Image 1: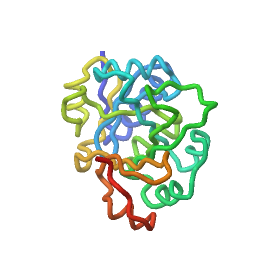
Image 2 (image 1 turned 90 degrees about the horizontal axis):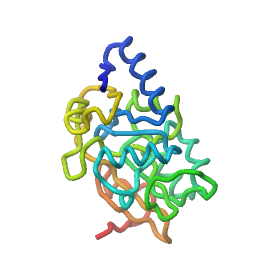
Image 3 (image 1 turned 120 degrees about the horizontal axis):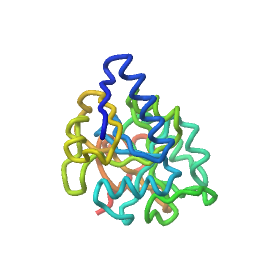
Image 4 (image 1 turned 180 degrees about the vertical axis):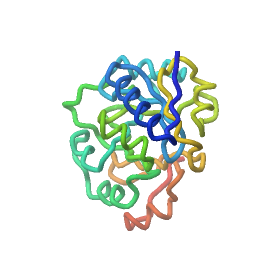
Length: 216
């Protein structure tokens, strides 16, 4: 049985965040609002919870789960190093609609899918998401929808697709524009935009001072 918490009402928001934190810490799933689309998330370091997330979406480990963080500094403990280009993008677009792919720290005990030694990181611009992330730490978060269906722009849309596979839904109202984050891959010799989304290619180019290619 799942419960939806209306985060526009202070008492419900506090109760919902407490329930969501408890769910994450006990290896269960939550749906949370972000500045792009609603997300389904769990403890990034709980491999069984990540598998449950993939099962709920109906997808396999060949599509690894991104990680959301609640602060700029969290990234330092998750990746091998933070190159200059990553720092520039973080300062320009975090919190916001830009995801960055970097080699993850080899010492981390997590299983996000077939990542080939990398991790995709983002800090969302949404107060409810940030409050939860700052409480529980990094979360594995994917769009709150069944694979092949449209991403959810509301808690109800997410619940219609995911149902009781998720025990806690945090309702933060309608998400912003129903646009996914832009993904910039910094694992190779040159920056590469894997997906154009909430942040434009031109904005990325301006921050990095180069012409960044878009993957075909």
